[in-house]
Image (tube, rainbow, N blue to C red; front, side, top):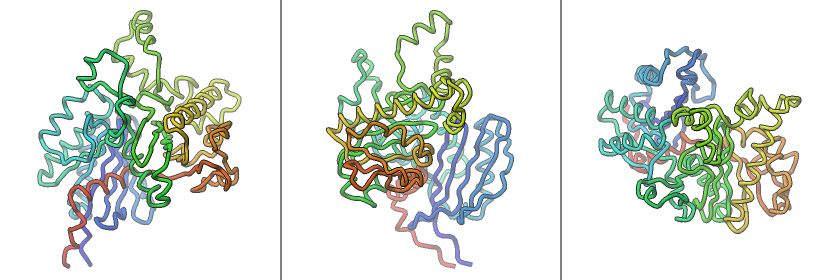
Length: 400
């Protein structure tokens, strides 16, 4: 039996889940993929998919909190024969401040991440815990931070600026944007499939539980809907999106709401869930056609997405390509149709049959704007970034 090819482990840690994929160096073919979901909730599971795409039966996980989930995952990974082939670990790190490229993790970088936890208290603590756990158990294994904010460092100063007293800018309070790993992957795929289109005026719509849009020109981000935190921009499953700051004062005065409770509300109790009062899942809301609140939540999501497309077309001075991606963008023909409704004036014309089939190209042959559906893959982008940074393609298969 031939020894396994050298591998790279991509880790995508969220607030209630951890996704992971082991890729072969060179081909970057996935060899093992899995996730632990429902961390901190009853019924936490480990779900593993083999290279053929077949899922193994779900395995219950003692994951009352994130630390327990991390400990379980590390022990499980170490028990897999393929773990011995791993030459590096790449982590999705949501906030990277001024970092514009993937970076080798050092004690200095970890200290920096700990300092900026207040910028993203929902994600950074869990991501830091993952990095520290790997460093403790496998100190010689190189680790790389792949920042979700890095893609947007090319935005012009006017797109980063927040209209608050200048002294806060010196502390790093500005618009950063997120979903950068997804956007970087989508642009690489668009460049591979349609090189000319990737150099044009592109709007990328990452529509999932977290949702945002990005305006890209000549392959560079020029604006994005998320801002200082991932709670800004488009209304999302449980996040508000953009919100009148006066509401903070109102709730603090009338309901004596603390900053911590406000943070909880805008990130976990609002958005589609808050408006509908029943669900954060668009599939559930679309099925409740007689529920006026569910209908209003869907209307709001599509209306706001349509407005962001219009505003970014203005920022770009026109539009050549619109790309839908992530769970909603890739799979919901109804939502894509409703978002694109009445955007003919921008040159967007959907082909109903192509859209219904989630085809790669869903615009009509004569549409001035090409509307595409591209499946995103953040873990693949992490693996690509780690491979390039550490020059892992130079590693050869071990001799048998």
